[in-house]
Length: 243
Image (cartoon, rainbow, N blue to C red; front, side, top):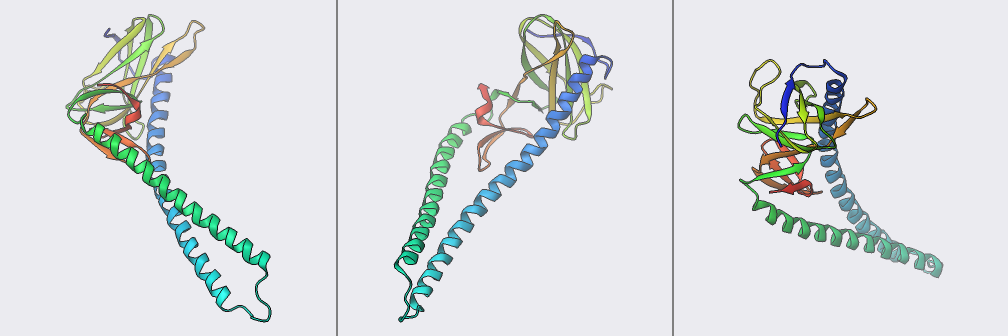
């Protein structure tokens, strides 16, 4: 069921203030997650490369040590056995990491192929990142009971661009945004963050999970997951709800 607008004034109620705060937090988290994902992928690749280098250096050092040991006082059996055990452990770590990387890559390639079939199609994903495409965006949310809910939208920097209070029905509700800010200015297509807050019987607020809708424009492998692109929005294919 679609929701009906009640008001559209920024920061006039505690409900809207709660939605604004949640949307700004979501924008900050999205930015931090993108940076963390890139850093983690780079760190993993560097760690595996370092392990392989250390393995080769260890083998070179052990061979050199054996070649240059004092014949009158050769390496003790215990020491030699210990170093061989270390050598075997490093070799096993290199092989295990290489095999795991290959397995993950094969799985992601399969998922990537499946994701390519979604390009050009409209999909719904559980995400606080709202894609504004061709001047329009929409989402659904489940309200536990009928009543007023507040919706807040921020840009990628956390600046509030749209707030609205709506009458929601118990169950699934739909909200559509025409891309205009609270001043009526049409905003550029791109990634925005959204949050929805509802009142509780005790007078406090509770967050409602948005399911955003967008057209898939691409699919990519970030290294840690396969992501769907909906314009400027990138989200894991694991967040897919429906097509």
